[in-house]
Length: 475
Image (cartoon, rainbow, N blue to C red; front, top):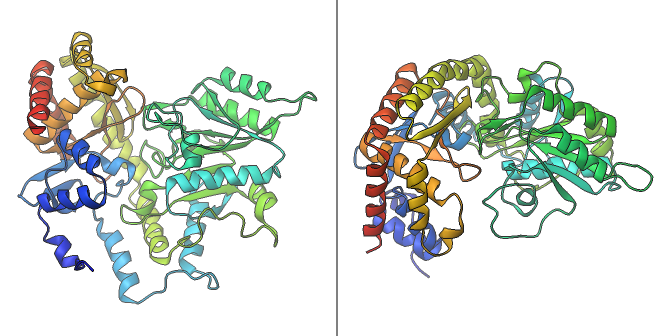
C-alpha cells in the first residue's frame, strides 16, 4: 500500500505537488482550467475577515464573499470559539436515537428570525439538498396527485440530478436525467407564470402544479423580482394551492440589505424557504429548508411519514455544524448584518456607478443591492474579435467574448492590485462584487480604487496581456 499522508504532510505540500496530486487523483482538466484563468497557482496560508494571505506573503483583499458563504468573513472569532468549545467539551455529534440540543436550538432560531408561521425546519448539508427537500415536501403535500413544478428561466438551484433539472442556466450544456414535469416561466413575469399554470390544467380544469420555485434575488444574474411579481405569486399560489418556495441560499443572512431578500416586503411569506452558504458561518457545511407549519404538518407530521422528509440522513443536523449555525445566526442578528449590507451598498452603488461613468467604454451596466453587485463589462468590437478567436467548441459559446474580457479584468485586479473578485457563469457573466458583511468602509473604498486603477489600463491592453499569458501557459 502507498504510504498515507498526514495532516502535517498536507500542510507542507508545494503548489506543484498539489497540482500533481489533483491531476492524478481529482481531475487533470480542473488543474488546466483553473490555472489558465490566472488562479490556482498559489496556496493560501491563512485568512481573516476580508483578507487572504498566500504562502508567498501576499495580502489579498477578498471581495468574493466566498461566493455567498462568507457574510461573516474568514474565520470570525465567535464562530471559531463556538467550534472550539464543542471540541474541547467532547460533545457528541448526532445519532438517530438521541435528540440533539443543538438541532433543537437551531430550529428555534430559524423560526424566530423568519416571519409568519415559517416554523418547521429540516437541516441537510448543502443548498442543493435543501432545494430537493423543499420540492419533495411539496410533492408529498399533494400526495403525489400533481406532477408539474414551475421554475424560472434564469434560475440556479444546484447541480444534483434533481436541483440541476430545476436550474435554468447556460451552464447546463449536458442533459442529465432529472425531475419529471419541470416547466419554465420567464423571470419576474407574472403573465408567464399564469400561462404556465393554465397550461397545466386537466380536462376538468384542475391545476397540476405542486410547487413553484423562485429566487427572489438571482445572485447568478444580479436580477431581482419586483414586489408586484412576488405578491402576485403569493396570491396565485394560495388560490391554486401551489407550494411557493423561495430559494434564498445565496441572498439570505443580510446579503442584500434585509435578513432574507423577501423580508423587505411586509406580510409576504412563502410556504417554504431554503438557506445555506452563510448559514454555516463560513465554517459549517449545513443548509435548511423551513416550511410553514400547516404545510409541513400535512406532509410529514404523522408516525408513518415522520422519516420520509430526509434527503440524506447520515449527516443530518450534525452537532458541531448546528452549534456553528446557532452562533452564525446570533452574530447576524446582534451585529445587524442587514444594516451592514445597506451601509456597504451606500458606498458600492455610487462608487461603481462613478467608475462606470468614467469607463463607459468598458462598463456597460452596474446593478445590485446591499453587498451584492454586478459590474457588466464589454466592448462590442473587442467582444466580437475575441469570439472569433475562440478555439474549438468554445466558439459555440455566445458569451465566450464576455467571459474572456471579464476574466482579463479579474486577472489584472488580482495580480496587479492584490484584490480578488469573481464572475458568474450564468446570465451575462458580470464581475461580481460581493464583500463579506464584516468589510469596513476603508476596505470598500480600497476595492473601488483598485478596480478603477485596473480599468484605467484599458480593455485592449488587459485582454491582450491575458490572452498572451494563457497562450504561453500552454507551452
